[in-house]
Image (cartoon, rainbow, N blue to C red; front, top):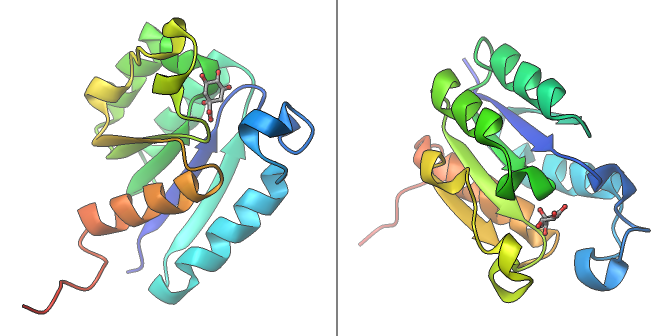
Length: 152
Ligand code: DQA
């Protein structure tokens, strides 16, 4: 059976394309979802995407994903730095989650340096613009053993 992955976008990411393009790039969220879908096409997996501006809604989406998804690529937006509730949800659902950011959060304001979620994720990718999503997907596909092993 083919694997199913969730691309999850947090608050304010619905405004991508117009939101501080010098920080987050010119692509819209629809563009990023389309680029991500094209990227995973060779792997015959099902990729769904969701976005919410609400902490509780993101928690509900993770709870539902527990029953269908094999892993999640998650840009939690500002909740990265504030949300114990989302951290608990990630721990609770026991799904592999890759935390990703368009901008390099470590090169920005100090309040963005700390992620409450990274310790319960399998890893974090930050700073590569829309390519962060593709790197996150590759990380998850590798974790799920869906990428070819290198020949040595
Ligand atoms: C972000 C970084 C966060 O600090 C910020 O609050 C966002 C976007 C990123 O993708 O670079 O909303 O997650």
